[in-house]
Image (cartoon, rainbow, N blue to C red; front, side, top):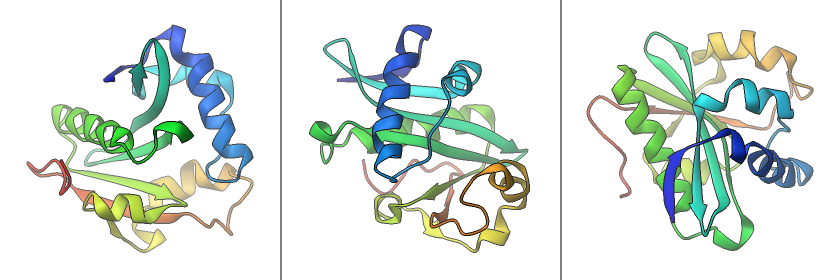
Length: 158
């Protein structure tokens, strides 16, 4: 299994993976065109030429980026794939000079294990008034807002 930058040839697999979990109400659907338009933000976990996981890093502000669209195939969960994808996002954030990452998740426990901490939703004004107001779940979102301070760290879990 390897983690790499996503390619055009991965888009339909990324879309199917996200769609699988969105259908189960575990994450939000992402239109195919959204994945194509933001492909440069995505990392994938690949095993035997198949995408088994994906995650994206979206810069939100001068010191803040979102770790988003994290999905790992059911049969590979619990094997560190999600952790490796988040770490790839952390590495990219540091390369870009971003000091903090945040996530909105229906599964905050995963992020807590990596060193993220829960924050009040108001700490993410750019996110809330940008993308969130267009979400069908707004303002009654069940996702937990989480923050991670990079500043030379990677995460608690290696």
